[in-house]
Image (tube, rainbow, N blue to C red; front, side, top):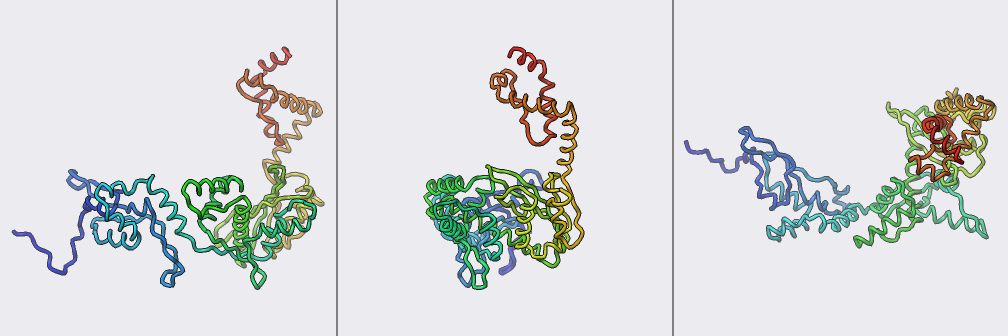
Length: 439
């Protein structure tokens, strides 16, 4: 029986297999294949566009009235069978018109080398930087910009004329925040790609100066002027914009009428000789419980309960004006400044709240206090003092450390770490006794 011919105008077969010649013709790459029912061959079921993977889609002008959003950065995946060469061609002409035109003019060998990663890296970076050049705008309230970022976060260096130095330095630090007619602010980022790179570098722990240096190296390596003109002060400005925009989001959440309660957790610490007070918020939004870091405020005053209380009240007043009606619990460690019955931080916060507040103290710190109390009762605290002095002395003995192959654990403010020191001393008591006797 002769094969049946497809009628003119009829739909094509739904089982068109992938033509491997299209790997070179259209710049595709096989990503998945399955064994055929006979087991003698494999059937391609998925291919992806190498133009999307190695180079990226061409940039578009979103300011054009015909386009409302940026082009996606996803890699195009074709699944089948069937696989239509018309689909490949339409994608390449609409998303990679210029690159595909250059690619089509090459020989077969030239097409195979076209996607060399080393040769296409510079073009890919430029494509990435050009892909999102629409300016970003972040609305931020006046209180967050002027009080929290401009006042609580800011401590200018003292000069011959304090007022002049303060006004000029603060104006430069807040330069990206533009005041609006209603008194609010809008932070405008004209180079979103650079802004994104700055946040990614600082988020992994790089300082402002290190971030500017790394991005400057990127600029020199790839010759892209869009990464130029960045110093540590510019990095600081972008980070302040990110802090302000995130505080605005948290402020909007806490001020929402559907968010009727939240709990507060606070803890003080020191980093690079600067004291900070860390504030966390736990609240429920649309049935989901969120535990978020609100802010870590630099603390320039003495660590008294009154100073900490005034700072936290000032912070909450400008983030959520009705915080006194929504505060339901306060969590802190068991340090005296935080938990004193008459004038501790928790007591002062509870007095401000409209409703009864649940007080939660840090369990590890309470355990630490129990260990401290028990240890200090041994020989009227003589034992702990001698051990403390002896471990400090041992940590300075370099020759002893080389001989023993390790170092005595560091003495910290946590009494729970005292156990690690005692275990280390007991395990090496013979060597230590011999060393002391020789001394």
